[in-house]
Image (cartoon, rainbow, N blue to C red; front, side, top):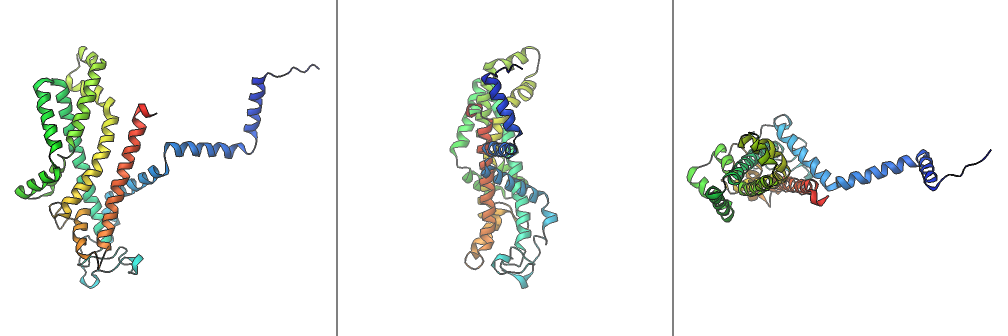
Length: 311
């Protein structure tokens, strides 16, 4: 029988198939998949995502998870330390100066703070996108007027505006949420205006308008999906900023008012007991820091994933 020699390419293929059939190939392929997964989803991003999901779950299930009502008073148990500081299991995170359970108050505070931040961020993004589309569509004096408003908003410290409005108009939760909704809209307006002008220059928006589509349909159905990735990144940057702003105003006593509670509200009350009961300030402060850091990290990761120039 005549033996026909294999070509170099055929030998390489046969060698690869033989290696694939060897017992050690499966672990190596799993290791390679793990490496690719860690490159796409770094451990820090995974941890931040898990923390964000946990906080969202706590906000949705706060009423079911809380062992006590957040305003329930027990003066006999006032200033009890957390369980990791020698406290009892009846109050895992201790109690405050009125004997209210810190864990129950923390769960209620997370719900209120995230509710304020979520609705405010949606209002801010909606206002910014609307004004951005308006400026890109009409141009001329309308665009100049919107840009003047954008520059004015960017030049004024928002904390000063918020303090003035709350001092003159009082404070209710709807008013406070509406006020927080005015934070960060100028960023969304600038992004939307710039990207919409670029979309109009590319021609696909004008082509859709030429076949009879209304301006609203052009912007909402054709332009908005193409700029949504950049806007999503902007929203993830605005969200933690609103959490910090709400916490700062509540810390000053101008945010969420009793009997409701928020993370900033808890920090504000806990500062008076920093030496005698530090957990009253440190626990909500840790939640604020971790939540803001996690959302900001996810926003940076999304920016890198959605930006085609970084791929």
